Amino acid sequence: MFTKETVYINGIKSISVDGVQPYSLSDTLECGQCFRFERVSDSTLVSEYTGIAFGKHVRVGQDENGRLLFIGTPDEDFEKIWIKYFALDTSLNDVRAEILKNAPKENKLHLAAEAAKGIAILRQEPWEALFSFIVSQNNNIPRIRKIIKTVCESYGKRVEGDLGYAFPSAEEIIARPEGLESARVGFRLRYLLDAAKRVCEGETDLSVIQNIGDYSAAKTELMKITGVGSKVADCVLLYGMNYLSAFPIDVWIRRAMGEYFTDTFTPESLGRYAGIAQQYIFHFARVLEKEGGGTK
Image (cartoon, rainbow, N blue to C red):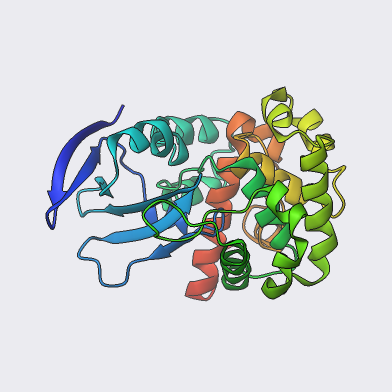
């Protein structure tokens, strides 16, 4: 379990969180599971980001000792929002051990799990996750970020402290659908509007889906939304509803499974944390791509 203490960073009252190692803030925020965090380029910390979630702004960094620093964060927000959002109540070492217990000994998943051992699965707001991963279809991360930022600005709902814009609700989008036009969402427009309409009318109850507890049933419900296929549904379940067994398969994962993970195992065989194993594989494949390949 982590420990926290009050510290001052450049005169700002902040919260220091220790005992979360091997947590990697940069790997967690840059692995493609969220799109509303920006790196602070002139930080004196190993990594530092600003972002918005659940209508709140957060400035969070990590020092050379692996401690997380919530700069200027009120203690109430930390307790009510950020512990859960950043999955600080989860032991990454215990999760990794359970995943590898179900993996063949010689499988490269062991290498991937070591390379990506600091990745945590964020617990995002379900509606934002649904919207974001519909936008992610046939898209790249920089453009997804740009679209979502533009959408938030279009609806103009400022967060407290005037430090950015909150994510628009489904109701706000249905009331003023033209707010999506400046974001150039393209063919995804009708999918986004269908999702917003269903959520507004209660035809798709995200709270109910989140709490069904049955992965297959939850996925079936999400796939009733126009434009939500297997991959998008799995992303929403994993990143927005904490179904950690969900295993999104996109081009990267399919290729990685074929090139580097040819041993016989299936997502189902990886158990209740298969979705975290997916992040190990995704990260491992991206690193190999950047380095120009690797041994199969």
